[in-house]
Length: 135
Image (tube, rainbow, N blue to C red; front, side):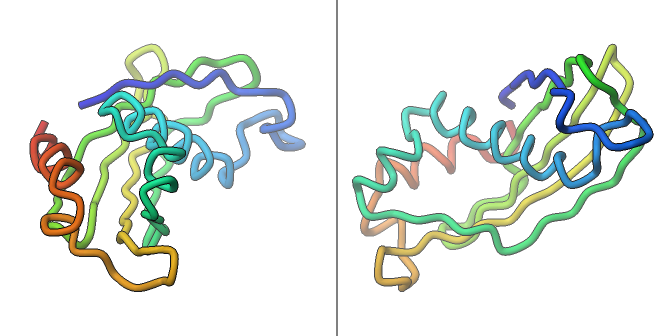
C-alpha cells in the first residue's frame, strides 16, 4: 500500500462549499502517479518506454464530505494484476474518517494503441507490479 496526501483547493469545491465529486477522480490520478513514481516507474519513464495506460473503468463510493483546506490521505493498493489489466483500490480518509472508497482499472498499450504483454515486453515493470498485489 502507498499513501498520498492531497489538500483540497478552493476551486475544487462547489457552491455548497464541499469538494465537488468529479475531483475525486483527479485525486485518484494524482495518487496513482505518485504510487507509480514510488515504484520507480513515473509516467515520463512509461511514456519514454512507449507504454500508455488508459483508464478503462472507475468506481467511487462517497462516504463523507470534505471541504476547502482539508487534507485527504489517499491509500493506494493493487487489487489485481494479471499482466494485462491493473485494478487499483483507493481509500481516502480525513482524520481517520473515510471520505471516499474507489477503484480504477487500467490496461497497457503501446503508442500504436495495441495491447502490451508486460511480462514478455517489460518484465521489470511486470515484476514490480506483481510484487504489489495484495500489499
